[in-house]
Length: 288
Image 1 (cartoon, one colour):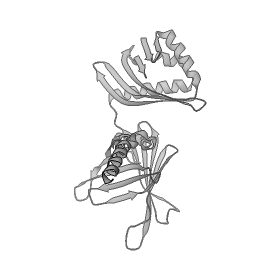
Image 2 (tube, one colour; image 1 turned 180 degrees about the vertical axis):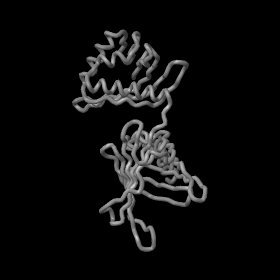
Image 3 (tube, helix red, strand yellow; image 1 turned 135 degrees about the vertical axis):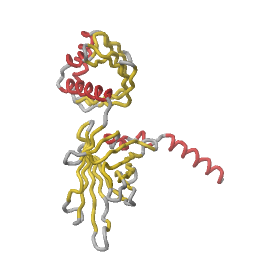
């Protein structure tokens, strides 16, 4: 009997872990806007530090690795790490911060809304008498900027005082800047229902290849986008990987159109970008 119970436990556990819940539950992706390599500036536009943000442990943890630009009085360079995850049991985000001077802060409550993720601590002692709360908000300003606003309250959250206010600016390569600029042009043209501008961002012999789809030449591209743009709503392009081969960029990513009826149309794509008339354009657009 015990052996049967053990085998059943092992069987169901293997099914549970095979599902990789942090990869299938979209809540774990809410903080992905912070992932990347950043140079961080203070409100005086001076460099405050450098931060690398990555996803680890099967997409479950957003790991920050922070290094300050200046040194402490003892000559040490201040550094720290934060571990951020969504707790499915409580339905909240949590952050644990630790540093190289023995400090730590635990934010047990976090919520993502209005394009920002806000963490708060419970009340904790800072000396023998006083209790405080801390609040930490990350604002997704755009693809290459994140604001981090740290605050403290000495009256149980009734009022808040700024401790620091930082802007993370993404460190991007030449290829990333080209792709970011192209994607912004595509998204802006879609929002304006400007199918002609979209079609002109393909080369003269550019093509679109997909399930049941093969589009080639300028007129066919215009007709394709004229029809697709009737979906309305908004279009978001997300880069996953960029590879450079000689004078060609290979871009892998996802395309998400949330149409005027709020229906989501999401596909994966691979683009081949080349230069034509001194402009980077799409030579091949393959989706699935």
